[in-house]
Amino acid sequence: MAWIRKDLLGLEDLNKEEIELILNTAESFKEVSTREIKKVPALRGKTVVNLFYEPSTRTRVSFEVAAKRLSADVINIAAQESSVRKGETLIDTGRNIEALKADIIVIRHSASGAAEILARNVSVSVINAGDGWHEHPTQALLDIFTLKEKLGRIEGFKVSIVGDIAHSRVARSNIWGLTKLGAQVTVCAPRILIPPGIEQMGAKITDNIDEALSCADAVNVLRMQFERDEENAFPDQLDYFKKFGITEERLKKAKKNIIVMHPGPINRGIEMSSAVADSPSSVILEQVTNGIAVRMAVLFLVSQGHDQKNDDIN
Amino acid sequence: MFSLMKEKARLLDKETIARTLMRIAHEILEKNKGIDDVCFVGIRNRGVYLAHRLAACIKTIEGKEAPVGALDITLYRDDLTLIAAQPLVRKTEINFDITEKNLVLVDDVLYTGRTVRAALDELIDFGRPKSIQLAVLVDRGHRELPVRADYVGKNVPTSANETVEVRLTEVDGKDEVVIIEKD
Image 1: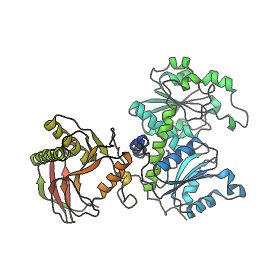
Image 2: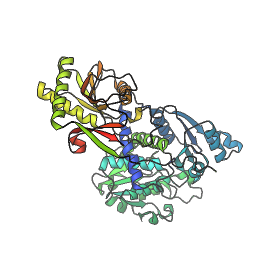
Image 3: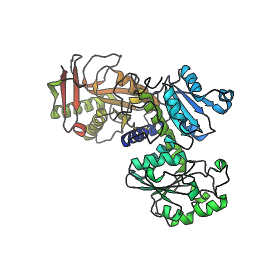
Image 4: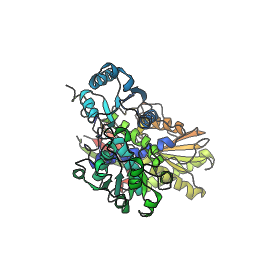
């Protein structure tokens, strides 16, 4: 099995074998971060540009660390402060970065589909680091990697995703990835935060948190994105915690070894209690560590992918 | 596309491989005056199995165990951007400190020397061994870099359209070394 894609835009496009290749490659890369010299020369002389149109610390830093551990040079562009303000389009920005002879662009954008538009218009590799409400493939891959590490495999296990599903690219990418690998996914949120089309993606829906927890092997808790609640339609924070917050009491009724995940940043006391976030069930910090290995694997693989290169432009 | 390959000669069989490894084990003990401070690191894939076998030989001779690690050199290759067939990145596992050790690097076939160059670079990132020695089951010549093995199972003059294939029970179901000729 070889990787042939120039880009990583989402998990919807990938087949099971491609997802497994990324996970297996990440397993090898994880060891690099345990060395005294945490660096390998695989991407020496390559330039990785982090093009972030949305504020992000953890994903950007994770990609930056991953690229540096592969010996690539990293340029960070916070696009809010750049010539985007002067009216440059995404495609023009991409072509300018290409003209700088960069090799990989990691893009975060608030518009769904932005990564794909960029990928179609440049010949360098593009990695989607989150586009609108669409996909955030590397986050889902690191969630799945962490689960696989804990459970040994994904197939046959039950994963519940709790929280703001409607505005969550993390949820979408997780549903694609997990179902392709044979897990059963349940999403749990207030009805207003469940978008149409989720069932067609292969996930079950509930608005009862105890039901979502009762038979789950893992629960992935998403952040409530109150900043996106422009119409003031979200439930009140306290109310949400009462109905959906993950607490020790609720986990007592769940499977004993249930794994608690969260992509961060955590709002303690809203999505989950502090006690749960710091409990032995929580793998939140392991997710951060695994994120480096997964992103190293993705950077390495797309740098090896050749197919569409040059075919897609013009 | 697959080119037609035919097996030209069998260089080593199960018994000769076993005897060869035992002889190399004795040479390693002789050169290092025992086994203290010696560790083995095999290059993936088959070098790892050979490293374990050498360590096992040493155990039967000296009754002492030497640590064995595995090295995947993919990320240190000098042809990463050139090779058509994409290499699979496998795990490097060296769970001991190599600093101040006499490290025996083990591979199945020594050819251009480029794999060894990559392995040396990677090992140095793990620490500073007292020495690195190279053990190979077959040296087939055609070096492109100034690399020489300290322990050689068998020197085999080959031509460029031949390949040497080491088959080991752990991966291939049987022990043998054959020369294969490309048509």
